[in-house]
Image (cartoon, rainbow, N blue to C red):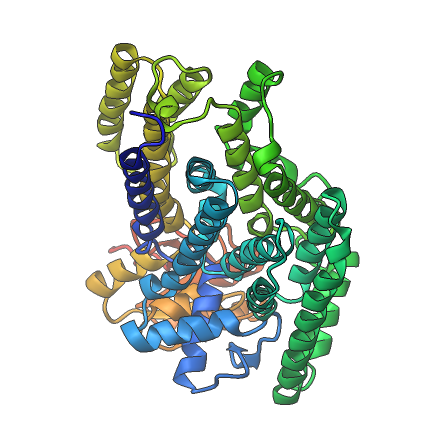
Length: 530
């Protein structure tokens, strides 16, 4: 391709749009995972059914662990398209698309067309980032909010000319984060923005940063005071218990300080292997001057989030959505800088590092369906299909040479297969959707009981049927219920039931459907004929 050819940019942009749309919308029909996704989707459904737009409820009790913006968004989608797991997934899908679009627009303005496209491509082809941004949880909105806030602050304060209007965009994006996850966004955006201004010798603009922070604090404060008025006790329960106490002395999801390091490194493969290799090969010839400021902002945002969530006592893998997108974008900008300029470099034969990407892309195309079949996440038919694609990729690399466009195509195929096929198969193991649908067809008169607590996914997928909840200590009552109701199906946390329950039943339960799922669906075996 000729240098700086508009048709070359158009070709890459169309390819990026198609891959992004397929990844984001390809997993819409995946079932909701128990308990997190099902819980948030169910809370929104209950709020809509009860016309309660201000106080979330879970199992009849106020659920004040999270702010309500995600619930409002899902409720709005339910009103438009009806209640289903696919409609619930539209909200995180829109957030992930928003993160990608904001990243591309921001970087195209600040560092140029090719750099923006490569950086956004690295984000889209980083499996961990896309996986968690597609989950029905507060993590997708916070990922979008952090990226949009950093982008807006950089556009406002990080360039040669001051742009105060961008502070309004930064304030709005910050408020989206506060309404989605809480005040944590203030920490993971204020600190890197302030450090970036100091490092780039623009400390005179710290006063403008203070204006943004003050506006965000005032807006957040008014919002939390309003929620406290609507639901007394919200500020203590959410702000103190689920932010300060959970950070300092966690009461759930504890983990070591290095918890996020392996997942972050593995989740951005192959780029975490490729970029250091290119730096080593081209370290003497690389100049970061044209995009140095943007890389500094992205790197500081990534490091601040990683350090903050590493020292926090409570840890969950999905928290990486607050900082991993910025790390992927920084890797993409470095990748652009370590390659010779021009669009033709992306299609040049035997370019430095392209062989690595090509083989690193072809190998998972062949390996992923085998792993998925072993784990029962996909059928065996995918093995020959993906093997043929991998062979074509290997043959193309031999005939055409190692090229960046070929390597990125193979990496895209691997991520597409993972996000569309393996993701749905993985979710089937942590959702009772398939089992409940099977029961509705083969045993329509089934009645359901849950033990030792309610399961949100059961409530979400079991239509128009009452769920009977048996808690720990009610094993005798549960045994009598199962014996008196031959059509009863028990949803339990696992197939290894507590000794107290098996003793009360005086026997064992069998699997109620051909499918293993979370929670397990079991029933008493039918009495044998004499």
